[in-house]
Length: 175
Image (cartoon, rainbow, N blue to C red; front, side, top):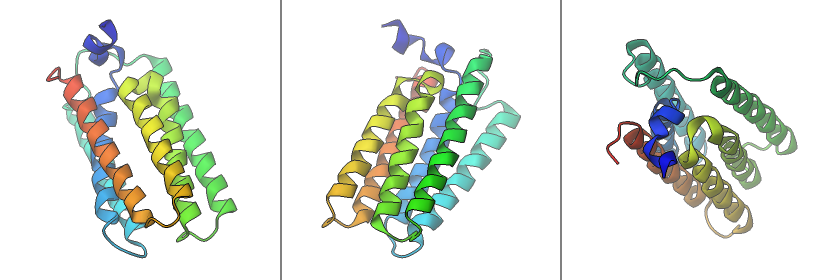
């Protein structure tokens, strides 16, 4: 399967995206252990660490340098995915203004998962698989109302950590 042996060349954004996913997944997982604003705080902390990793890695070329130039269309896909995510998050926020409600958080997780589908062509099949798993987790979380939403939140964090770590490992050809 050439796709899996050539992933670093086909998806040069995979390593940076994977590193970001590990950081944000850790923030989400930590946030799942608390109540109230913990999930949001964990999400913000994970995003901040992820952005820092991307900035340092990009500046030092540790994350991005594989001798492969990212095609411009992959940067375009990344931009489109971000715009779609921002738009859908705003739709969720308008539809569910109670930011501590189960529907708000589960739809937020669903939207983030959906944007990973868009990222599939630029970040690879692991990212696309993560999309399906995250959306499934969020959908189950919407339906299983007797289960604490922090369970879905923790599962989401673990999925992101696992997929991100695999994306980084594959990009270094350790796998």
